[in-house]
Length: 183
Image 1: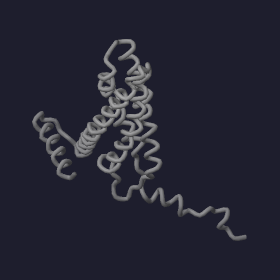
Image 2: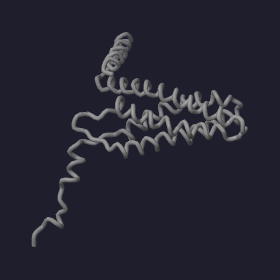
Image 3: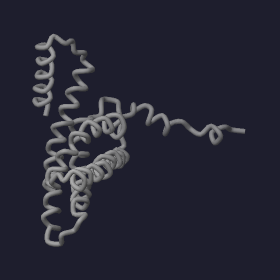
Image 4: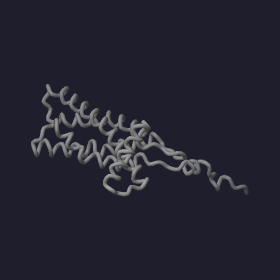
């Protein structure tokens, strides 16, 4: 994975040098993180899309008017697990001296993706399919234009936010003063 990160970092730095645009180290690291998020997103999108299509094909014999909702929900549940694993391991890594509660991060990830993966996807799908007459096989791809940047921001600043290790340990280490005082 470090080779991929090094290549991404070099490509971004080269592009900025080519355009004669100064690039701070912190901006470079944020751009590298966004590209890594995009790479995870590509695999997540492929998995989500395949699952969505499989559900549509499985439900096709029943001619259900809400089959695209079932496809979106099923794809959401399974692809968020995939995304969480790789974003936690590869994109939003904890730094030295930082801590993250995985259960809380997973819950936040589901909430974040619920906004974009279920609510927004179904509202947009309704507009694309029912109002504009776009194919239900193409609608999930159009949704990505809105959901990808929104997901990055929500994940970076909320779901995968880390805390300094000493802060999380300090709450456990501070005795309750009312119980520790001797009369």
